[in-house]
Image (tube, rainbow, N blue to C red):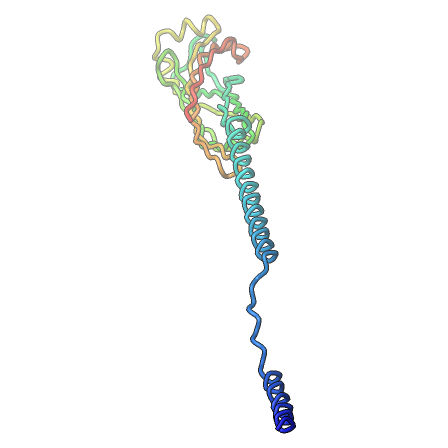
Length: 234
């Protein structure tokens, strides 16, 4: 009986071991390690910092650019008033009787040397210049100058010829005494309109008005005395 039991037991044991070895192993559960999580968080923080730095640099650059533009507008690019000046007056034609009386119906013209000074860093384009001449409050002539351009920080000179209406001049009772004195006091009004263009960004329309009172020496045809007042409208 003992022999049969041992043989039976020895025959069953290998069979159970084979069954145990044949079973598949259960897969191990995959869990991310704590090191990987820390690395991911660190990379996210780095990206966020880079983004903040980039945005800060762009914002600072824009602020600096705006400040520079504002400073330039109020200093270098500030539109300054163009200056008109009457440099001289020449009487081209004058027909006098006995050297003291102006002949009626005769032709008389006067040429005014006018300069336009542009103190701006950009050119000043102006339209037709209008000059009206007065003698003791009466209009005796009017002239129009051609349009032109005064370059940056330059002075443009032009000659404006005024044809005098002699009948209006002769009809004034003060003319004979003024001619005898050798001095003729007249006044003029000049209007000049144009535009200053700064880098095609800043455009300013400018109108310059100038009133002048001058005393002209009839013999030398030169200005003896002159007083001018300017008014600029931007």
